[in-house]
Amino acid sequence: WSSDVCSSDLIGASARTIRLANIEGFGTSSYSVFENPASLYRIRRLSASGFTSELMDEVRYENLSLAFRLSAGVVGLGLMRVGVDDIYYTGMSDNEFYIIDTFSYRNYMAKIAYQYSFSRFFHVGASYTYYLTHFHLVKGNGYNLDIGFFLDSDRLDFSFVIKNALRTHGIHYTDDSTVPQGYSGNLSDISSDGMEEKLPFQTVFGLRYSLERLTFYGQFKTIGKDRQFVNSGGISYSPSLLPFLYFSGGYKQMMFVQSIEGQAFEGIHSALTLGIGLDLLGISVDYAVEDSEYYKTLANHFFSVGLSF
Image (cartoon, rainbow, N blue to C red; front, side, top):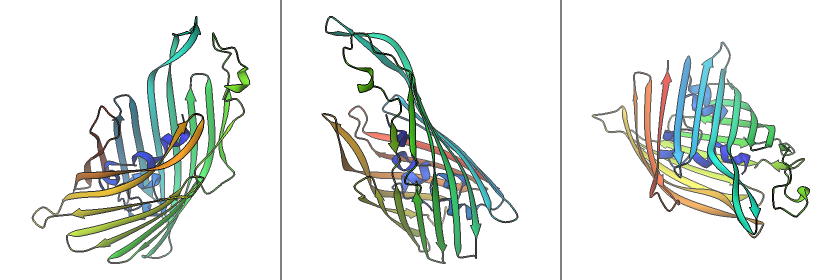
């Protein structure tokens, strides 16, 4: 398991982001705290949002966020959680595995952000992130920093964010496990105690071009130890008769890490996304669907709600 499973760029901070091919930084609600903290400038007074989904019939993903305006700037708070229950802890006897117990996996990411506007056009923000991982007798925690910038013009907007900017900071693990029954090797060979996981340094560039009813989105991201380059594109349409409805779709690329015979390899996964959103009287409701690589599911479905005052 990796603490990066709880990172918003792997799943999406909201159904709105997912229906726009996971293009970050252009949200209008408090969930921007998970994407580009500079985007919180759009909060007028108070905003709250919630998002939940279940992946592969067992992985539960949830987040909550809150943002409020001060006399100078906006403060944002966010909590994200990924959880899996009933994972088997096994032993071996007579060359056969048997179940000793079950345990749960929990991964948390908490954020606190501050945004400040230098003018109507130029906005900056920063967010402190705390990571916490717990599964069986293994615990991990660490922290890092995101720094964001946003340039807002009449038709063309630009978003740029650096995620996990503190490159020397990662997740530090402790492990109270004992030697599993039937295991003949050394505990140090399988223990996580004292190990450190590096958090992925990311740079995310986003563009949005707005016409009267159509809006085009593009994103370029570098991520991972080999600085993998991935890109995404999306489009949103709002009909003139129903200006509070938004229909959208897109194509996205994501990096994944696969382990083969103990060696980790980075690759690129692509997917198509579709969705619909409603913004009315300060309430936003979004639904998104995207391709799934899980053999039992053709598509993943996402739903999120936001309130803004």
